[in-house]
Image (cartoon, rainbow, N blue to C red; front, side):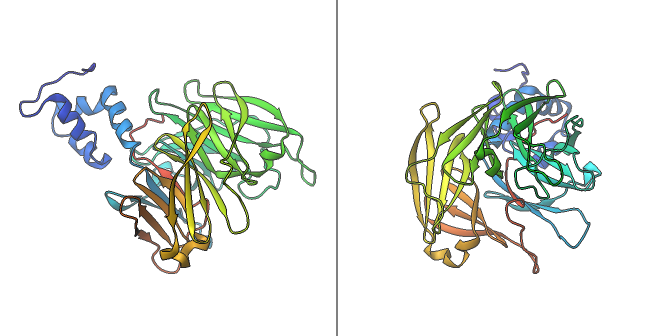
Length: 363
């Protein structure tokens, strides 16, 4: 069956493996202490791979709540459709950080007090890695702001390796950005950064930083014009474009978002009264089909500030300024999963991330 073979008197081996692989991580780690045999089992590479493959099928929402008037560390809320709400922190990293990207259980975080410092961590196992600094000058987007560098995180569940992408332009103070678009890629295997450069393209100046999707060995961003998906192939280090469905329109009350749905690229368009969900069923052929059309009339008051975070074929997670909602596709029922206590509001875009609770190593 696998490299680690053991016997259980009550259940077949595979049944026990499947049960353990569905436990929350805290419960799983407690079971390591049951006996030496279970410790070896749970530590085995085969089990790690099995656990992660099951975990990625259960997307959650990671909410980052920051108080702009305070220098305290952000608090993190994990919203799980099946297990409810739990709270945790990133205090184990000994630095005040902000979540910049999420992929298959790992987070890429940037240091708030020390610009240009990045970490990769697994908040469930409390492992983290300080990435080596790049030798590049700071990168910026066309219209710089407090988080100018484009950040992407790609974690391969099968190989248990990951890449961090930092991209942007060099820009001297008081000048327009240089024409060269710089892309820095960190490889967990080599523990080094590599660099490649492309000429300026208008699409690059409008990429939405937070809407990044990793599938098929590539990172995907939606342009602000919402006409294309920009794709970075990490193996060939090349950019290309994928056109959106012809029916997708941006502006005039329509908002467009890029997500992932069970390993497929997905686009969600939200208008005043409807939510349309497309998925790319055949990635190589770039064929889209309309998966669902959802009425928003029953949450009409929330629609202007609502945006989708993650989804499966069964449900969609969405966030407002103060709440995390889940829409159950089969029953057509909306539920509130989490609401901010007191008068604080969720800072949009960089507060809610898709998350999977895996034991993906980051060391």
